[in-house]
Amino acid sequence: MRRMVAEHQVRPADLVLPAFVREGIAEPVPISSMPGVVQHTLDSLRKAAADAVAAGVSGIMLFGVPLVKDAVGSAGTDPDGILQRALRAVRAEVGDELVVMADTCLDEVTDHGHCGVLDAHGRVDNDATLARYAEMAVVQADAGAHMLGPSGMMDGQIGVIRAALDAAGHQDVSLLAYTAKYASAFYGPFREAVNSSLRGDRKTYQQDPANGRESMRELALDLAEGADLVMVKPGMPYLDVVRRVADAVDVPVAAYQISGEYAMVEAAAERGWIERERAIDETLMAFKRAGADVILTYWATEAARRLAG
Ligand code: PBG
Image 1 (tube, helix red, strand yellow):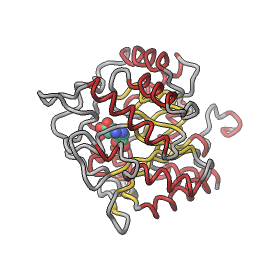
Image 2: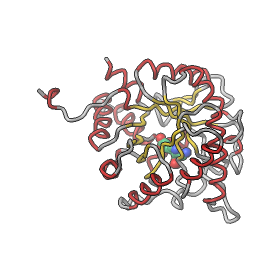
Image 3: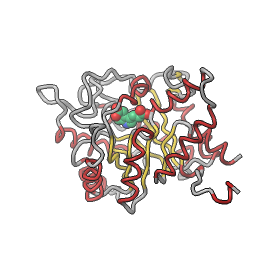
Image 4: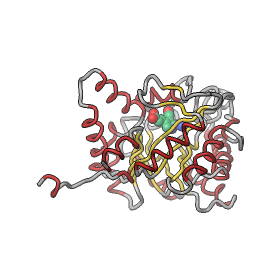
């Protein structure tokens, strides 16, 4: 009877797998704060993408970790940068069987770990960063990305990237806007995942956890600038924001279950404090109940297999 009257369902196609690829390694490197998640080689990434397809996952979001980082994130706009090579490798593996997405942001490729370039005072320079994003977006689309995820929270980033893509003939590359992205402690394990040593914090560009209504303003701007999907991040601590966004729009809504959320469940399960699989599935259902259409989760392939099985 419960099955008959269940209000929500998680489908494999709701799930998107975020994945890390690192330059200059011969074997995948485990991320200690995210048990079960690795920094991939190009080969192991291809295999992970194929496994995701087989499980019924609908998309993959790629993050590249270059060997050399610098102040402006040169690896991010190098056509042979690790993320671009990964995009080509994954497209060669899966074709159009997955929506292949790229993180359009500088923090994985800068030596200071910020999502943008810095001004003379060491503060993130919004408008100078937009020019870098525009260039990055075109290079990522050239490498085969179907969809870009601009995650840096610079004002105007969606509009600038949309215009750059259109001018370069990439009208059909779509944008998953990180619309409401909060300055969160839950990104902790991601720093290890992308070998980042962030100086300072992201409070000059990411949102204050105290603000819910502000997300509505970010939402209006992203939609006006051309967002195709809108996302809330982190996920679990911000399900109220997911609900608010879902009630307000008629575009698909995504939520990102981030590294710290993953780590909490894995750590508690490792200690025998919670039932791992039940807890994972419950968190995914919570996203659907809150109104998310798409869920980015490091458990995507595992959860999709369970749902199909
Ligand atoms: C920025 C970006 C971050 C994440 C995704 N894109 C880090 C940040 O904003 O600090 C975090 C994802 C996670 O924690 O799982 N490029």
